[in-house]
Figure 1: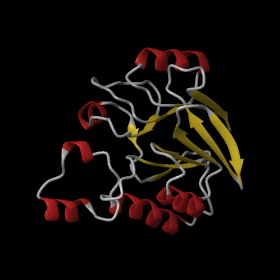
Figure 2: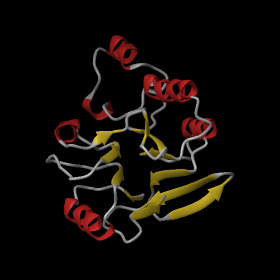
Figure 3: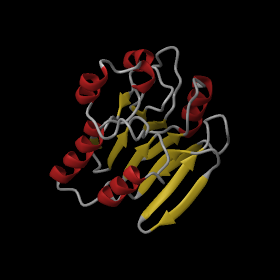
Figure 4: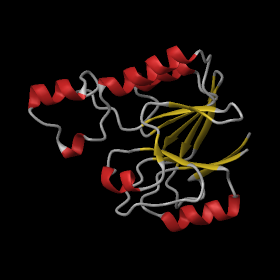
Length: 194
């Protein structure tokens, strides 16, 4: 199985389509932000994690799957999960309902912040899955933040993909950390053969 993973898309769908044409993957994964103003439709399965600046409307009308805080498994047994959104210390302690109750509304700029239920959902789903580890984990934020360190320790992914200002590939324990630049960069893509 060949998989294409890209860094932040920033609406460069032309580059994405070119990478798909050249690499002929069976699935595509995009690490946010995608920054789409129009929906995109791809002719193969594709998954994404939202970044801070992503608008929900074009993503909802696209045919990609927001990984949110869910765990997926391909027919060949490959397991993966993603956490859409970014860490913010004021939101991660509360559920969305608690936030709205205490503040009256959820501001538009906080729609892509992580809330307590996002983290709890992934943790509980993983614990109930019977899996010892995930093959891949995707986040739209820095893995150096404590909340992500705790998740990485729990799910023990073979590969962790995240957006980065410069390309990073390093192994820590049994996890390979891969930080991808924007899709326009030659280091904004990663092809995984499984």
